[in-house]
Length: 76
Image (cartoon, rainbow, N blue to C red; front, side, top):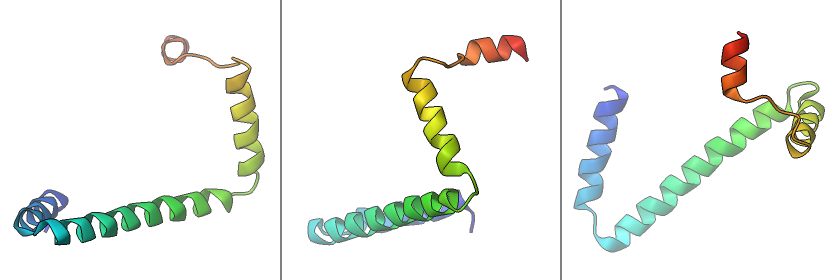
């Protein structure tokens, strides 16, 4: 079963749920989405030098030291 088929199957199940069960399903899906986000964050934090590079990038953005996508596309 591919992703599109899985999403369609989930939609069919969701359409059959009572309002109470729909809330439970929404909470569970929110939990899964948050867990994915947390796992991705943990993976990034394991990369050597990531925290420092991210802090520097945030500082550059705050100071306006950025290049627009248009400028990058023209340059490369």
